Amino acid sequence: MAAGILRIQSFEARRSAPAAGVTVTITGQGFSASRLTDDTGNTQDLEIDAPDQALSLEEDNTTIQPYAVCDLVAEKPGFETIHIEGVQIFAGQVTLAPLEMTPANARVTPPSQSVVIPPH
Image (cartoon, rainbow, N blue to C red; front, side, top):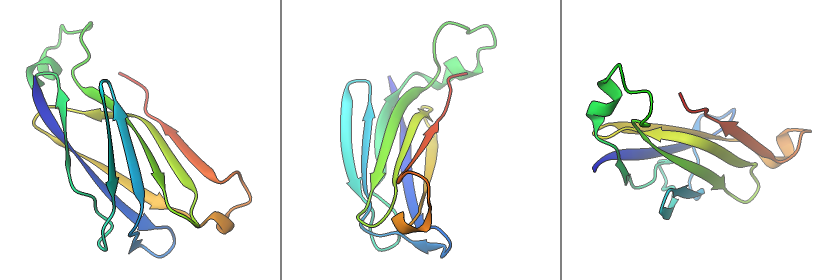
């Protein structure tokens, strides 16, 4: 099995400033990891096992998912929690997960954001 890279970048909504101190929990099939954003809003890259990249190029492949899938939860005190389900990681590729951290008092909706990326 090959590997792909998950790269996480966070920024504060409305300010476009890096969001430091965001705890990001990443879970996938058979693994769980945690990363903390630095002063630039970035985490250390995470290498994730993924199916061979040739599977994504086979037009006749309708049975084997050509990518790994993981979910993210991003948390920081004073900000809404972000949930992203179904992040697709392809072997030999860098997947960028941008996180727009919204101050908890900036909305009148529940203090959480969820994004679901469907399989395809």
